[in-house]
Length: 296
Image (cartoon, rainbow, N blue to C red; front, side, top):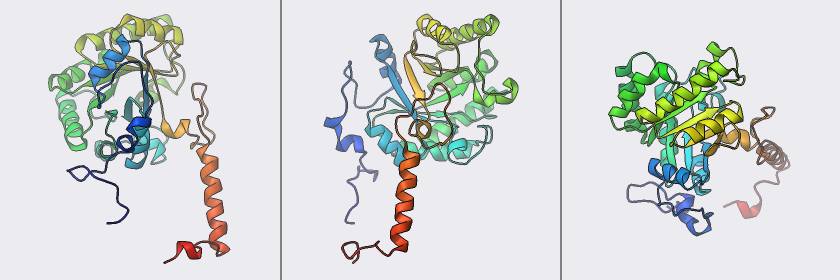
């Protein structure tokens, strides 16, 4: 059909990255076509920062991948951004599989990591493995992210034993918001900071390929990054780590009124979209759209 993009042999359309490969920004090390967990380790060794961003659907994944992003996180924050839930707790495994599958279809280059939803890996390590295998097989994602330290060690080890790459997540773990009583900064006290550092070393020891640190003091985050060999990616954790992650809708200004200290706005799409929509309404009501040139 006229107007359809060129496609792979399996029917998937080529991503924007492939169409604009020569225009992609160059980095300090020669990356392979596809970013892998090994790529991230090499980037840390070369002191090249890792750029990670969320995506939840095919169209956004194509744009994020085309930018040259290193990692795309299919976060359980999809239940906030896409469904309007207040916390990440309502996210189900089936919903995560759907979002991750959409993102995988739109991604050629970036490493695609999916969150394990709340309730699908805590407590029963055998159930955790079963759910992890489902998420990997049915979505096509390339790694999973799990929140927590020593309390979920058995589940992580079981998942790793199946050859599934795991990214850890310490500090503010949103799935534990009710335990914490909010989204405040974590590990400000020495005792909690010591536990976090011990958990980070444990996650490295058992085989996690990377670690996310969320909303902790920057000095502590730097200490963790310098204490372990795996890449440490921060959100609200300062610049002394090995990379950064943000929620794409937040950094593009699509979530009006949400502006935590750690968030930098790189665009104001909320305003741009509103302007476009109001102009469209005006054009329709004034019968200036469609024009003769836009009609058959």
